[in-house]
Length: 630
Image (cartoon, rainbow, N blue to C red; front, side, top):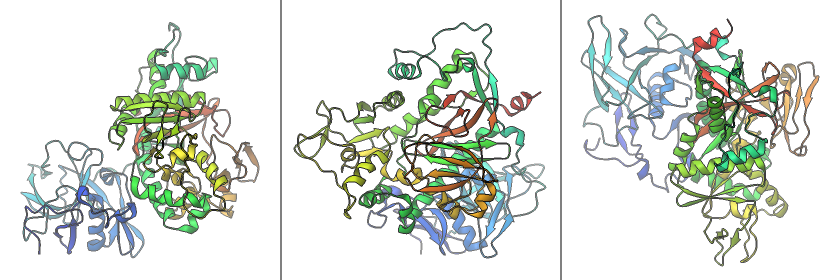
């Protein structure tokens, strides 16, 4: 029996029952009871052992309703509006694909009971869009069932959440009114093989996924300094690079790259989807000790990693995906969500370069990055003073100062600490800076692995959880700061899992043949030998200790470094495309786990390293992009 309509239900409370006796639940996260939902895993919804989604989001309800009533589910997607791009669902019992087609709002193909109604991102459904299940259709209205819109119970004796007004046009076109003035309905999805009135299947012109090298016209360009050394971050960048430039190769000062808008959309979609896949895999690893052993993490820190995962939710500020983009596909190499670099080059330098070189074609691929970083900080839990910890390294210096500007733009104070200079304990075990300010919030350019190396040395024989050891008047060590209770670190400790390359074989086992992934394994298989493979240390930086072997078992290239003693994994060979003189890698950046911009890095070598240049990237209109070859 449903409660009265005006009753506000706490998180997990039943709002009503949809056809098929499928309950819809309240998503009032503020009322979630900590004892019932103690960690991230508790928010994952399963039905018959099949993952349905995050409790109690709109996507979770739609997938669960379809499974219970129709026996099929749609693939995992990054955002609800991405469902409009899907063209198949999976019959769970038969394990085969069934056609799914999209029909725009105003199409003459009416929705049917069981259709999915899809909202575009924006307004009421900012960033994510929305999905609901249509359960009844007439000339005047449709009735829908949904989650994550209202926490009130459905009207008594109703098996639907809302009724939306519909209207039939003179030519039979069917329109559904959006009840929120600042939102937009894209249309509906029907499981049918009738494509006569459907939206076209998202196709791809392979030529739109090339990378093009271009040159700015410098014939009449007046040479002048274009970075403002009165700004601390730009001054540090100029000092590190030896001048205002993105490359030290004098002949390439005007070189830049272009991608099509279609490629940009593919990169955004891939980044958002892959972030979700990496999060699924992280949760899976932390639930399976036999897999966690593959990550070569000190046992003394595992309890803190699990605690970080359970408590910190999606508290990322920065992360970076590295891709190979070719006409034959887009493949991710790895996910850097612990101490990712190149943010300043993407979010500031390439835009200033374009202005200085009068490149107005298209749009700056990182033009929104700084603003989205500031937004991520505003939405973080950080309050008061944020301490930025960096090593004494020129690149880390400008990277830290750039982040300081983003923190300032978010309305927060910050202070940069070089090494551990000035940090000390007080008598109560708090860590203070040189001016006596307590260290509560930390963003770092240090890799978590640097702190783990110290823990490995100290706790090799210990089985208990690591705890910093303090003594009043002594100098804190890096691990003391980063793992001290009540010190909240960005990026969180759990980022050790998705940043470790041991996650790649786990992803392949969970999502085999996913179009964005490369075959990866802890052992060298016959399949990898036949395709060619790359050997990588599970923990490494800057392209160190990597070997590339082709399908004839010939060594193409190898690099040295400090990670030779790390455990290895194997990944399918998918070389970077060579554009002119350089191999070109496309990177995408996220803010709080959502796509925020792109850049390219180039090198004459197949393996990029810390000295590989970040050159400017522009996104241009598809037609303009194709015309560049004519």
